[in-house]
Image (cartoon, rainbow, N blue to C red; front, side):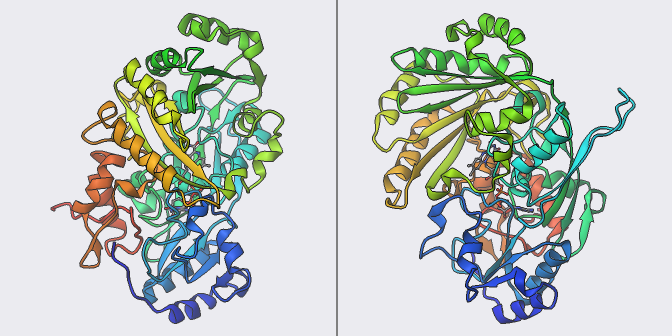
Length: 509
Ligand code: FDA
């Protein structure tokens, strides 16, 4: 990856003419370290050797973002954009090599404006929301759920995840099978481009608007300020349930069967699995009552032995803290922007499974990988349902029909450790899984970013398309080429770039 030289002094002088001093934190500011760390979710990127920014601009208006872009272009200072700070490789606030860059932190731009639409069935205006990139998913869900208990938004489970990064990469959670991705529901957006202009969905053009809905992977096309999203209808009561099965209790058989049953269940039912040590935890959300759920589970998955005591009925909004934060958490808790996992470091990567993995392979996974002292976890999210009905090219996110489930591999360590053993576990299990997961390309989910999949190479001050294909086709398959052409339209000089940003491609190349 190519590291640039820049004029720090000129940039800072330029920015201070448009951004109030109290919103600008340079390395000499007493609060620089705490502002930089404020939304960092992975301590791995807060060490002495982390390449830190020249400054953090905590924008509170679009004009601050525009000024940072204009000054950055003029003085050769690149920008990293941070909404919620959850990037698995920290690309929103650090650089992998020693270059001069500034962070635009959007946490101060976080309004959520819900419009309930018109109640007229069919002919009425749909319910929508404008949400700023710096809002968290928790703030978005809370705003929607408080406006109506019949509306929801299909996005990730973790309430502290930022809207900006999440929608840029796809975004999925417990409503995935019924309603698809967060990015599938974006109907307009405003973005500051590399010229410092504010563009809406029409002004940015069809290809660029297509690209930012899942193909940003963050920081490739511009800085998205705000998103207009369609909301989805939910019933007044949903039902959550969790079932734990140890290997001794038959977890291997259950998991083997789950692979084919879960993606083919009715769209209203989402049953994911968290595998850790010798236990598979089945965690589910049903868009309906326990009475309606029980016959479905008894018919499709009698091994669960499900009965009324497993069910927990609640509103959709209540299901958010219940599923992610646990029993006893309140809906107000999803407004808390700090997360209990903040003190840990982590490493993650992902796979897609298109053919069920054989029972003996699962046996081996439990007996070897999950028996190790430094083992992490696997999260298996079933696809199918609405995901399978959206064509691969409809959005940049290509993992649609034929995908049984997504695997996320994750491992954690505390400040006392160096993470070597946990990272080795991730890399080892990823190598082991190769014969059992998708091939040509081996698909991966960009929101579970992993620089082990490849990093950009800059040739002649422009990111190389050919080199980018190594990681780009894993995240985007054939859509990578169209993304690169959209990049060429909106940012031909490749100002917005990072270790895994989309390279510009001329349509004739
Ligand atoms: P962050 O601010 O770090 O940004 C991520 C990337 O997007 C960076 O490259 C950044 O530059 C860019 N970016 C951010 N804002 C931008 C903007 N306004 N305009 C342009 N580019 C921008 N995913 C999922 O699908 N389902 C889930 O349930 C979860 N759960 C989850 C839990 C936890 C604890 C973590 C750490 C992560 C997840 N994720 C997830 C992954 C999450 O969706 C992914 O990390 C998002 O990119 C995070 O978005 P943030 O805005 O928080 O990150």
